[in-house]
Length: 386
Ligand SMILES: Cc1cc2nc3c(=O)[nH]c(=O)nc-3n(C[C@H](O)[C@H](O)[C@H](O)COP(=O)(O)OP(=O)(O)OC[C@H]3O[C@@H](n4cnc5c(N)ncnc54)[C@H](O)[C@@H]3O)c2cc1C
Image 1 (cartoon, helix red, strand yellow):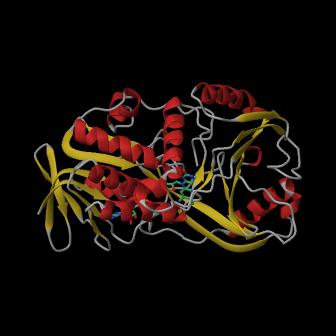
Image 2 (cartoon, helix red, strand yellow):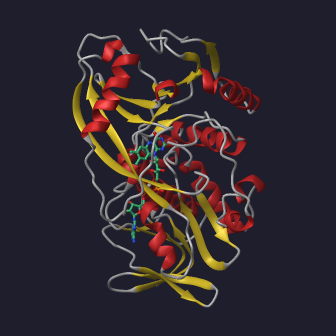
């Protein structure tokens, strides 16, 4: 059996790419070692924002939001997108960069509002103003259900006639001279004109199985889930509390996912063997930061705490697209802690690139070729890291 395209990994990246390949007419096989969203996607806070520091990521976040808004019409199923808004609470150190980014985002048609000081009391009720220089509010932001969104893509892919194999690990890629020719499964070899490596933190060993370098680090990301006591006035939006390096993602019924954002230390781990529970010190640190900033959260109760993986590239931008050094192969990994919200739009543009050979100049920079050319994305202020 031979395919136009084989996509490895049914996280949000592989699922969106497979759907758009199939929709464009390519005979496509999507292969997943476990179930859809059983990697980092399933543990994602899935905060949706357009608050980025480069026009490329702003454009992709904006496009993904439109796709998530239209998921019922496009995919036949709701992607669980709650457009409750997003707040970015900035410290004095962040002020200049934040204002520059807000202006750049506005120039690209993004709807956002700026307030000096703690601002937007209806979005951030009873917030402690210590150290807050300003707040950006994006009405189009919010959060999604990462499992539901991924399942919506896989379901739509199958409805178009795409072939999906769950519980099927790819053992290695197959290569003949300067071309990847397919994949090896436990019981068969499968040929494909193009193999898309969307295996997240596990993409590196697959690339290495055919001698391809993939500069991915795997770091452990901890998250906590809390229940705020009943009767308190609490935020409804997603929040990057830049001033405290924390993020908040509402779950409904007074529950929140709360994690630590940049700046913080990131620790490399073995993606096949890492501690999947959170550390006590991490939990206490989150609790102290939150109760200091939002007194309404005091006495909150821990419901769950876990650790998952970020697959991180040297510049914290994903690796996407074909490479000059090899035919029949494309990367789509390295979401680097912020990859959920841009994956739907990247999947669509990647599919177009693979099938037509053409893509936008700024999108082409995502290719692995940027590392050899020294053309990395410039890491500037704007919260590109998770
Ligand atoms: C705790 C946490 C919080 C996050 N919060 C946010 C956020 O708020 N907003 C945001 O935009 N992003 C966030 N992210 C990042 C985002 O979730 C990820 O960048 C994105 O989900 C990665 O999706 P993926 O499909 O590339 O990878 P994954 O979801 O890891 O999918 C890879 C898939 O490949 C499969 N696979 C691996 N090896 C093989 C093999 N050999 N054969 C077959 N299948 C294989 C795996 O089982 C897995 O399902 C967060 C991530 C984490 C971990």
